[in-house]
Image 1 (cartoon, rainbow, N blue to C red):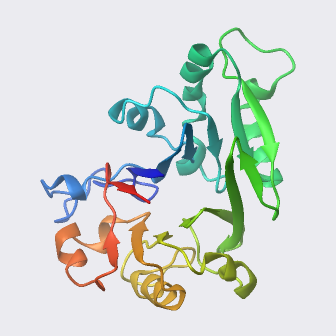
Image 2 (image 1 turned 120 degrees about the vertical axis):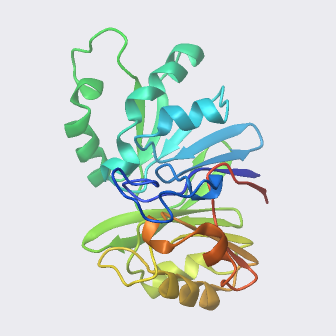
Amino acid sequence: MEITFLGTGTSQGVPVITCKCDVCLSTSKKDKRLRTSILIKDNKTNIVIDTGPDFRQQMLREKVEKLDAVLFTHSHKDHTAGLDDIRSYNFKAKKPMEIYCSKDVLSALKMEFSYIFSDFKYPGVPKVNVNLFNSDEFYIENTKVIPIKAMHYKLPVHGFRIKNFVYLTDVSKISEKEKNKMFDADVIVLDSLRKEPHLSHLCLEESIDLLNELKPKQAYLIHISHLMGLHHEVNATLPDYISLSYDGLKITI
C-alpha cells in the first residue's frame, strides 16, 4: 500500500496570505503546504481522503489518472471544497464517483453542491454515488475501512484505519473506545496544528502524548499551521519515530 501526502497544511495553507513570518517566507519546499488530503493506493484501488480547495492542483501534481473513491472526514470547506473537480474522473471512467461519508457530511455537501444532487442536473455536472457509513467497517472494492469517530471541538469527525495504517485529522478529543481502534498500527498520521494549545485541534505536545500511548512504528503529523515553526527545526526536536509530514511525501506500508 502506497500513501501520498497530497497536502499537509491547515485551512489557510502555508504560506498564509499577507503573512511575513519566517515560515511563510521560507524557500524550503517542506514549508509550502496545501490543504490536508491524502492518496491511498491499495493494489489497484485509488482512494483520496478529502477533496479540499487544492484538490485539482494535487491531482495534477501527482498525475493521478484513476480515482476509485473519495472518503470524507468531515464537512469543513478545507476538506470538501474541491469536490466539483471529480468530474474529470467521471468523464474518463464514464461512471459516477463513489463517495463515502457520514449523514452529517452528506447534508453539508447537498447544501454546498446542490447542483450535484439536484433531480434536474445541468449537463456536465459531477456525478456521485453516495455510500453512507456509521461506526461499522465497510469495503471499498477489496479494501477494508474501519471508521474512527472523534471530536473536532463540538463537530463529530471521522478518521480511518486501513490495514495497519491509521489516518486522523482535525481532532481535539477521542474516546477510549475509538482510540482502541488505533493500537498496533504500523503508521499513524495524526492532526497537529501548532505548538500552543488550540480549541479544536491537537497541539504538538498533545499529538506526541497520544502517539506515545498508541506506540505505532512510525507517525507523521498533518494539518500543520505556519505557527508550528520551520519544518527542519521542529522535525529535529521530535522523537525518532515521529516526523512532520510535507506535501508530496510518499511512504509504502
